[in-house]
Amino acid sequence: MDMRWEPQTIDAEDDAALPGMGKIAGLLRSVQTPDFAGVTFHEVRAKSVLNRVPGESNMPFQWTVNPYRGCTHACVYCLDGETPVLMSNGRTRPLADIRVGDTVVGTEQRRLRRRYVETTVTAHWRTTKAAYRLELADGTTFMASGDHRFLTTQGWRRVGDMEPGEQFVGDARLRRLPRHAQNRSILGSPVGTDKSLQVATVEPTGSDAPMYDMTTGTGDFIADGVVSHNCFARGSHSWLELDTGVGFDTEIVVKVNAGDVLARELHRRSWTREHVALGTNTDPYQRAEGRYRLMPGIIRALANSGTPFSILTKGTLLRRDLPLLSQVARHVDVSLAVSVAIYDDELHAALEPGTPSPRARLDLVRAIRDAGFDCTVLLAPVIPYLTDTEKHLSAALEALAGAGATHVTPIPLHLRTGAREWFFTWLQREHPKLMPRYENLYRQGAYVPKSYQEWLDDRLDPLLHSYDLDGSRSLEARSKHRGGGRVEHNPQDENGAEQLTLL
Image (tube, rainbow, N blue to C red):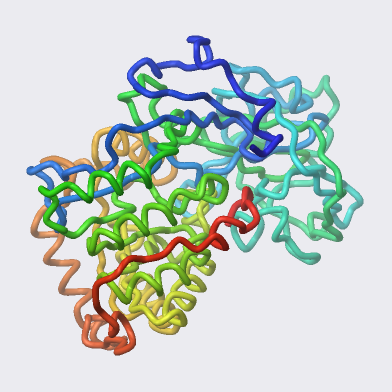
């Protein structure tokens, strides 16, 4: 067992450490690790992992496997505790001293301009992470984790990806205001930038350091004069009785015996080898898969039983298993698909922080094609009034065609309970003028009405055809070798280095 994990084990009998976990049978232990700051993994022995899709669902498959409940694709972004944070009263306070309920300055998109607004701190925590040192043109320095994001003129950018010359968004005059300052005139004014906010150098320090972060109502705050991203929640798994949103990102149920249980279930006489879909609820190649390595066992179980299957993912960790998938594709039908929701860096950062970037997912499409597979891309979700313009759709399809995608399936946004509340909160904050249109569009439930779907189809059909992404192109090499047989276990598959960073 990795010693970074063992000392962080939480006693499974400690009810205070396991809110809502009484609903899970077979709980082995709960684990925390600095590599996933703020996240608890609840390792369980599942009795069953093969799930029938509810009859009322409109999904085109009947069976699914989800080795994880919850998703670690979201990052926890952290800064040095001494970083001055701009409070709503005009004073600054060290990030380490911020408390839940404090009001700070964040930003909000209003019409065509981002403006400074007052926002409330809803969560605050401390962790230890590998530190980067970032210096701006005026000599200001930041100590931050590689995952921490600042707003630049090119959108939200991870510290670990930054290069000299990039331009931060903010105002150097807000830097290190005197503690007695009472100037509130900044609220409502537009956010700008200047040359002093250019990145001069950025480099890892080679050591870990204590760091802090918080959650605010706007999803950002002003750190030493520049706009800084923070962690905010997405979905929910309310069945665990966790706070909606936060629990989905920070309380991850891991079915550590998924491969063995699935193999047993698939070898029952009653199993008729119907298609099984993976990635329908939570991503099987989320960051935690780099540590738990559940997918190789699941893939072998499916192949050895002669069960056809498909994988849908946003995670570039799929590359690790492409050799195994190529092997089993000689015996069973294997379909691979990549989800690309947004071809816009800033919107992607706002709605899917912590997931691989659109560029990284395009590279994954190329890798899948190079391995000899067709690659379907789910352009999903298409977000009404935000990503359904002809310009946006055309740019996305052009990029996908260039990456080698063989087919693109657009899917409009659907908003189930939990996701609906989170998305509407985000929409009200970022695009309040769209709220009436969304309330009307989704007035009958989670799915868009037939009229919108038909309108979207009319817009997309000629674009899909022009980029040869309407299903007419196929790769002959895919699945050309068929036959029975058992897929042998390859010990080399188990010896790869653990991947605990964002992929």
